Length: 267
Image 1 (cartoon, rainbow, N blue to C red):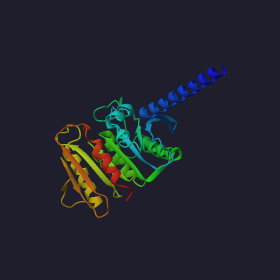
Image 2: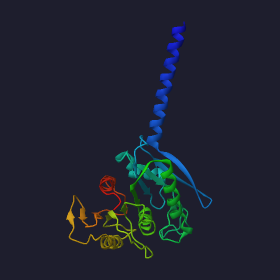
Image 3: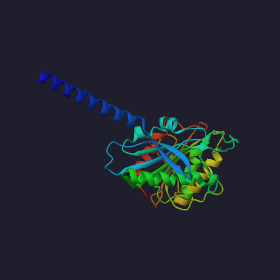
Image 4: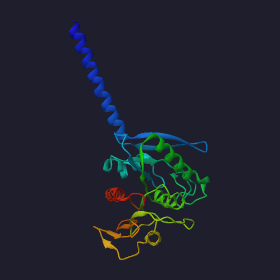
């Protein structure tokens, strides 16, 4: 009788451990929503962290486009599946006025410094500080990437918060007149020739600005389909993928972005 009780107890413990392990795996696969408070306003981000939190990990901020959200963007970009060793953060924007949303009913990001009380720059600051406290972050490998309005904000971070960031990935983005890029950084840019919202001329102008800053103005070298690499003596190259599509985040985009980030630490 006693033996049966012991066996049942052991079996129950084994089942409990399996359930706990499955729950932990599910939580990691789905990410964890983290809450922040910025100027009295609740902000959120969906965070995917590696299993081994003791090792120093790269940190990637991935910003959705106007009207997007953190959950959908985590599936669209899926950086966490391509780079499970990294801490991947998908922040959630707030209602934002834009050219296509004059009433500001859909979520997005400030595109220029000094607008919206710099709420999103402050959000970035708060997230970075908190994540550094919560996780073992490799300060040589902190990155920002974004699509459309999220790409605008990544350019703004390059202008207003360049120091902690090692490299950038821009998809369907442009610079605004107030953006002043002053610190060279490696950047990979994905642009659609037939983008009806962010015209290719504006995207190419931003690329040229980055090339000048990064000393990457030489003759570009083919680096794959649609890919051109402009090398830099400062180890801050500019890599471009000019595709024939429109205003989209191509399904293949995350692969070269992760590869680029892995290759470039803080200069």
